[in-house]
Length: 242
Image (cartoon, rainbow, N blue to C red; front, side, top):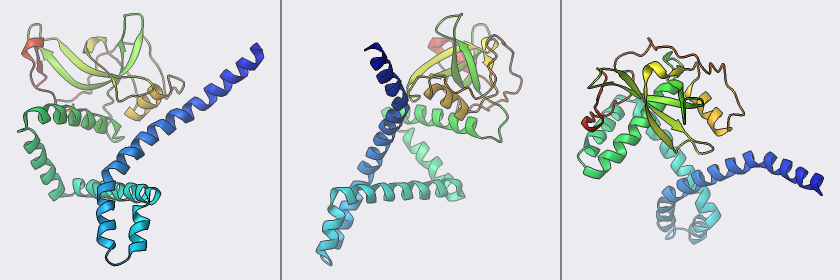
C-alpha cells in the first residue's frame, strides 16, 4: 500500500508544474477574453443587419472567446509598436502625467509602473548592471533571491540602502519589499528572467553561480539607473539617492 501511495505522490509531483502553468494561462486568457468580449459583441451587433448567421456565429461562446483573445493580443501588439514610436512615447508620458493628477490612481499606477519598468530594465540583455541579489531573509542564516528596484541614502547616517523586491513561489507577482544596506547585498550575475525562473521553479532550476556568502559592494550602479525612483519618505528617514 505504501508503494502505491508513493507512486501516486510521484505522479502528482510530475503534473504539478503543468497544473500551475495551466492555472496561470487560464487566468491570463480569462482576462484577455474579458477585455475583448465587449468589442466582439459590438461587432456581432454591427454584422446582424447584414448576416444573422454570421452574427450568431460571432456570439457563440467558444468563437467569442477566441476572437476576443485575438483582438486583445493584436491590440497589445499595436500598443507595443506605438510605445516605441516618438508620438507613442509622448502620448504615454502625457498619460502618465494625467494619472499623477488622480489621487488614488496615481499611487497604484505609479507604484506598479515603477516596478514594471524596473523589471524591463533588468531584463534588457544590453544592460550589464544586473540587479538580481541575495539578501539575508528571513534571518541572517538564510538567503532569498530579490530584485533591486531603487537605491537610497539614509538621511540620518548617510548609509546607502536598497529597496529589494523578494518574489514568492509559485506566484512571483506577490512578494515582500525589504530595505537592505547595499553593503549586505550579494550581487548575482543573473538576469531578471533567470531570477523568475528560479523562483517559479521553487529553486529547482539554477541559472548560474550562487555565491551564498560573498558580499561585495556594487560599483556598477550608475546614478539614475533605477527606473523611476520612489518619492522621498521622511517617516522612514530615507531620501532617493542622487
